[in-house]
Image 1: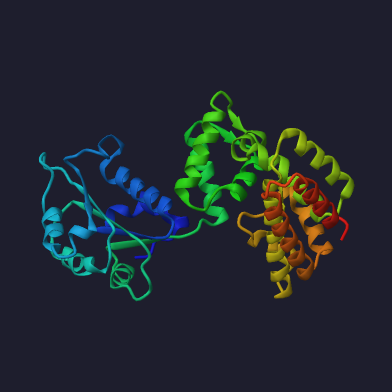
Image 2: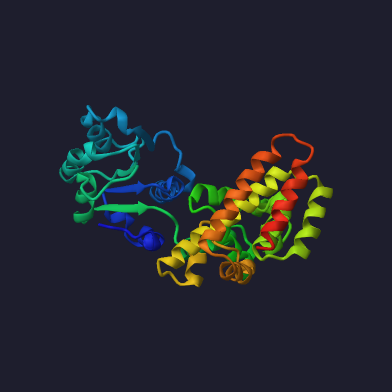
Amino acid sequence: MIVRPSAFDSWLREHAATVRAVIIYGSNHGLIQHYARALQRHYLGAEHADDAFRFVPMDGATLKNAAHQLLDEVRSPALDGTSRLIWIKNGGDFLTKPLEQLADIATDNALIITCERLDKRSSLRRLAERTSDLAIVACYDEQPSSLTAYIDTVVREHGKTIDAQARSFLVRSLNSERLDARNQLDKILLYSAFDESITLAMCEACLTSHDAVAMNPIAFAVALKDRATLGVLLDKAQEQGLAMPSILRSVAYHFMRLYQCLAWMQDGVPLAQTLYRLKPPVFFRDEDAFKKQLTLWSVEGVHRAIALLTESEIVSKSGETTSPLQAHRHLMSLATR
């Protein structure tokens, strides 16, 4: 039985009790852990989730040549006669035969198997997909809809609300790896401990570094060919003590993003869609400016700009007294091309 990530929560409430084992696999390790922990709480209850008598963690590496150990654990109840949960990490196709034998074992114990990638030829994956009392969940990069739902769930669990701009910012900014996303959300929840609602300003304060705040406008000014604004921003950066190599690297990174979008456009992808293909996507407040930059530059022009920025960064690290001035001139020259 295949369980879609978007339907996992409803499946957990309504159907999880009907399966003998759940296989969770994929490259999103944080999401795998999230689903496995949810199953752990569902089967054992939150108060007994880590009960040493009812929760049995096992490493798949120890079972490759000793599958009978798994079957013995599945047959055995807890000391008090209650059911147990067995969680096998680092599972694989070597568990296919033991799972086939589970059908002949009468038990109330539940089984979770977490794995890395399982390709379409995997015997374990094929068994779980075609068997009604086995479930399998694939965990790859988050889709915006599932990440939005996760953000709302976490915020609601802490008795807070989140405004639309803050939610949109988080969907665009958070890592698609669920564990990293949760760490960032915990940071925001701590920052907003005494507030009922999470705002855009709070999210920006937690997820945006001071240097990034200062350097991103410089990159945009260069790409927009806005010499006047660029001159003011470079003077401010010097006053704040920002290192020129870091500024040049930030601008080069921005131009690499422009290069990627222009390449997609040459392949026929509409301009607006290229912004959402980028990882991370362009922040919604910067979309209009980014689109304008794509109309001001060609692929060849961006390629030359990246080469100049790379060369300028190397020179700026040389320690020569004239290198900051030369880098300044390079940035201003890019804004006039």
